[in-house]
Image 1 (spheres, rainbow, N blue to C red):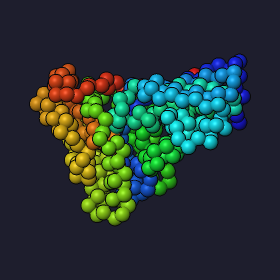
Image 2 (image 1 turned 120 degrees about the horizontal axis):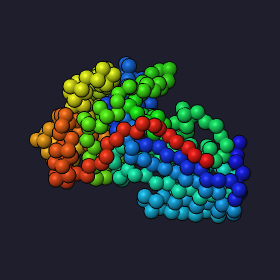
Image 3 (image 1 turned 90 degrees about the vertical axis):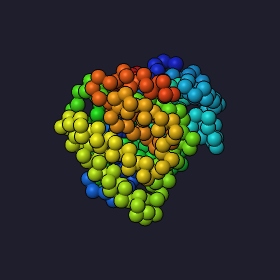
Image 4 (image 1 turned 30 degrees about the horizontal axis):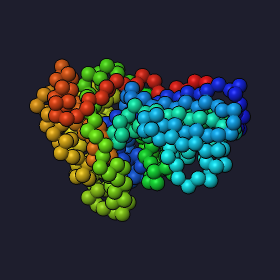
Length: 342
């Protein structure tokens, strides 16, 4: 059902948070998780926000504005957008191709995530924009239906397979276990007090990756092509993720520390380019000041690193990371997920 657009309609605003992944990443790419028993991915929503605002117009024009990237474009009407071959704001354009609202409108998006941070800024923005367009066009979607549309359309935008884990923190916030099974994907909320996470973890940005998005795709291809070494490493990554799930549920922070370090060790074995000289420097600085373990967020090669620190060392580690050339980002657990107004 399409929502007719006129000046009498109000705007729609949707917000969704980014995420930090703790263990089991890349396994969430179909069909990799089917090859590893009891696959699970662990992550948490953080208050680094994305937003989408849709405002109706009195004409047929469509305006797409990305406030964080400065990429703006206009189309005479929806048919002109549908006929275009390239877009300056492909995320919004591809979702408009899917929802096809009636009448003119302005879509404004914003992400607080730095470029290439590896904390799922684009996927969170996909969730916010999908939900906003669903509300605007009168489509009643469940959260899982919203996830499916956002994930599939993002694959169209980036032209490589998309994993499912990034969308769940955006939808729900909190600490999540994403169970990946033959009968489907199942999210479990892990009951950990946000304050327990916030005093033990530090997040730092190292700059955009040199080859954003390539690491996961290269590893994916190697796995599917039968690379035994990569397959064996993913067996270990799956075991680590299962252990991380148990440790978080039990609030066994010593085991969380150990498994975060093991996860990073396996990632580096799979793809040595996942690290950079700056990442190595930051990890060394962290260790000298109370950091106990660390791993890169997302595909690596730059982006963000999450550090597990001993109690009382949060400020000391943060200062050391800043002195070493990193940019410390606020790591506050998002208590809630997707919000839509209008």
